[in-house]
Image (cartoon, rainbow, N blue to C red; front, side, top):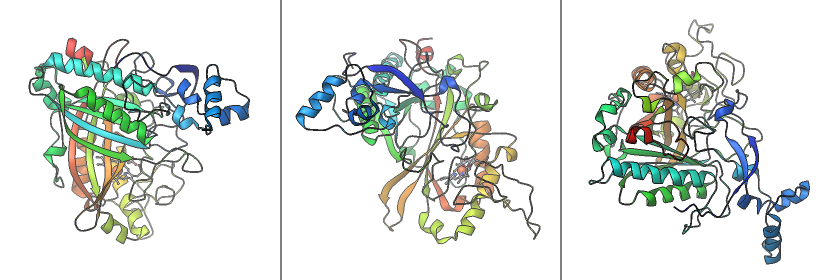
Amino acid sequence: MSNQTSDRKAPESRTAGSGPGGPADAAAPAAADAPALTLSRRRLLGTVGAAGAAGLVVGGAGGAIADAAVRGDAPTALTSVGATEIPFRAERVKHQAGITNPLQASGHIVAFDLAPDADRKAAAALLRRWSRTAEELMAGRTPDADTAIALDAGPSSLSVTFGLGHSFFDRTGLQKRRPVQLDPLPDFSADELDPKRSNGDLWIQIGADDALVAFHALRALQKDAAGGARLRWQMSGFNRTPGATARPMTARNLMGQIDGTNNPQPAEKDFDERIFVGRDADQEWMRGGSYAVVRRIRMLLDDWEKRSVHQQEKIIGRRKDNGAPLTGGSETTPMDLDKNAADGLPVIPADAHARIAAPESNQGAALLRRPFSYHDGFRDDGAPDAGLLFICWQADPLRAFTQLQRKLDRGDALSPFLRHEASGLYAVPPAATSGGYVGQPLLEG
Ligand SMILES: C=CC1=C(C)c2cc3[nH]c(cc4nc(cc5[nH]c(cc1n2)c(C)c5CCC(=O)O)C(CCC(=O)O)=C4C)c(C)c3C=C
Ligand SMILES: [Fe+2]
């Protein structure tokens, strides 16, 4: 990709609100990680209605606005959705994007295997190409000889996150620098995993609030991989579009539940310790990074929808309408796990999903859930092939995902309605430093 791009950022910025999927009234992310909203010049070309109404004058945009008017294609007012930019590099953030920033409306996850003849040098070259592309696209810039898929759109909260699978270290001769946290996940009794849609040497997560911007990034990164790596599997997902609800709300999943309420929040004092690899980690190159566990979880929606709302609420332990715990209050009221009903039974049943997965039931273990819903058509029996691309982030997968999934596997009331169909575990290094690329300290260290 060339540095000759068709767009430059204006300096004005403002920060976005809540964390990935947490409640709308939860604390905002730490300032260092907060995504900046930046109006790109290209983006402003389309804001004439809003800018004009507000009496704003934006340097450089006026001529193009006039051009648009002359051509008769009157620009429409754009919202902040397209203008929101998430920073790529470590000057502004220490972690990669796509972990703590709010859930985007559209997403792709994709795994690649290094080409048979690719060595460590080739892997480094690929990660360098990918990092450069990600930085350009996340800033809303368009490469030369581009497909034009995202032309006219701003950054649209695009985030691109790179991860390394267990097999990457064998392929690059870096076995000694493979963290033990990448040891394969154990088998769970309910697993029905498809190996062709699991694992992979390299993993990319793409999220954006515009579906064309997200697909554009996927396509650009796929083209960058040519010769260096082959696509292994790819999945696409979605979340609610910003502005679809009257006020910002925690997203719902395809079972209709408010999902993401009790996520750890960046403002909590142990957030970094739970989600990001600490400064004393053995593998220095992973300090400030995180581990992503990815599960394609199909929902048995025909079965689920036969249950009454009352039954569904007992299965989760929370109300369906507003996400409040069954023990009362609002969405953000803590669950009272000790409260019993008149019949002496716990109000939040012993096998309720939220009870079993809660940190209080798991020696404080917590993970950050940042999923996308998916729908891949209908199966032969007419049931939707739909569910959750469950993506969770943690400093130590053994202590977080594995611990929780072991417990859920044994007695979660939600499990009979779920099928785990694909799985991946990836080391996600910290953000690239100035002029560098993601994974450089590992590959060149
Ligand atoms: C191994 C971890 C988890 C898997 C797998 C998982 C799958 C899964 N969950 C839902 C729906 C909900 N989960 C909720 C809470 C919740 N779930 C997990 C972990 C896993 N979920 C945790 C750690 C928590 C938080 C528990 C707590 O501290 O209260 C909820 C309740 C609302 C919320 O807090 O988000 C819902 C709803 C689905 C549909 C699903 C698989 C498809
Ligand atoms: Fe859950």
